[in-house]
Image (cartoon, rainbow, N blue to C red; front, side, top):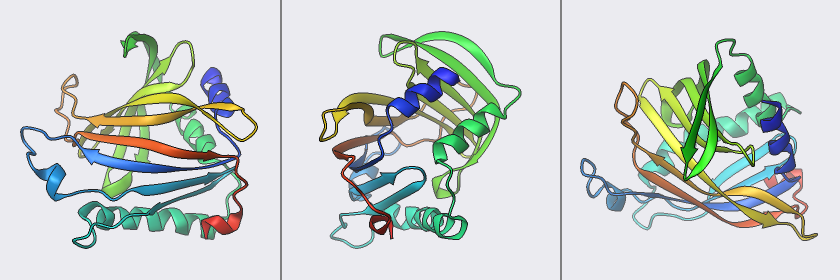
Length: 221
């Protein structure tokens, strides 16, 4: 866990902005859904220690998209928590505190993810609220043995099992300092657990990084 924290500290800049583009992958049981429910692009803003904002920067020409409507309550909660609590704690610190509080956590072994060895750690007693009404109930995390970055995760929720993989690439700020940041997240149905996943096949591409550009608190209003 300490190495995971160190890798996170090394690769989180003072501030950043990026663009998220989410798309569904067509599936046998959801054919056509990816065309009938497009997801507009979003911009994510981040500033240490705790400022986070996600806003839709595109519109579905047919009106408010299905997922924009579903995500808006979650985005409002993010903004409301920031304004009410004025926290000075990073959400990453909260995430690690939750994981470390699971006294039943255990290392499961080493598996290969995308051809690279990764340590698998299981946290069976982790509970967490997620977007769109889901509630997490246990999580598995695969951690790259060389970079010590999470490369795969699996959330167990009341709605099913959500498995996602992360791909990283070096992103540089104006001074040339490099940060290993995610450029693709793939969420997909998984059949390797006892329950079949209810997750949609989804790909998130992350681009247009601007790092340590000098974001102020006003940018998050």
